Image (tube, rainbow, N blue to C red; front, side, top):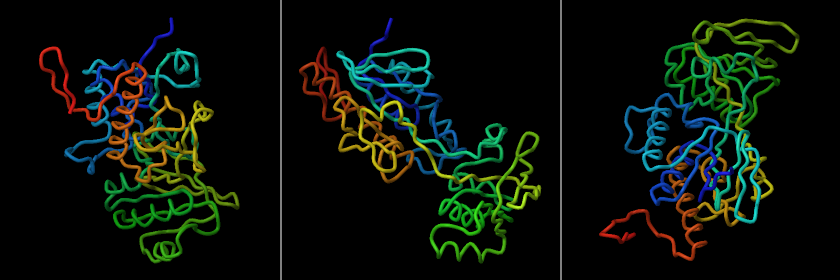
Length: 324
């Protein structure tokens, strides 16, 4: 039997969990579907820029938000959404294991970093291998590091690491660096930076944590170097194949949204890094998620002939609930 919900939320990062939380507060039947809990929050071992949160981490914040959502009687399942289609009663959300029907959907799938595709890369994630230099560079003060990637991502990573690490290997496949000329000139002047052109990373190794990386240059020669941390800055990808036939995407493959997280489809709302928002930050995703959740709630309320709400604050006196 196909389960039916008022709203299905795709993604359990800060945007998706915030959307679910605000929907559940309004007692809408809500299901959050995600491959994992937290999304990119799992790449943040120390969270320093989330207002009101001190000495926390991305995974701790994700678990806290999950608990808040579940306490409000929201449902959650860990699965992969494969297709969303229009049906007579609303929207059909098909996953790898099941199917659900919803009156509205909030899209918050986030984005994932491009990897090198090495066999054991995932086993060293957050154990020496990182995908966010801005997030994790401070943990490598005075240590040996390497960074690889493309364009301005790589140059920015190398400059940031040079301010903290004792040694930085900047590894790239081409003969020259790409990106801003002034930044390229700056990184070339860094005494603790070694540029390694025409080279790729063949393999990585270590016991419990990363210890070595093996390099392969364009001539076929191999070289193994000792590093404590490897930063991979190859950009990010957004997977929206399951819904691209229903919503408008921009040239960067992001979901076009207007005020309230509205997409080009009246029953689909979106928030977080998968949208065109300019600032890809946890706090921005959370705020947009709450907004998209409330917009989805107002949409289903209007389907029932009700007015919806203007704010999430409410007070119940007797049998009457007042929103203000």
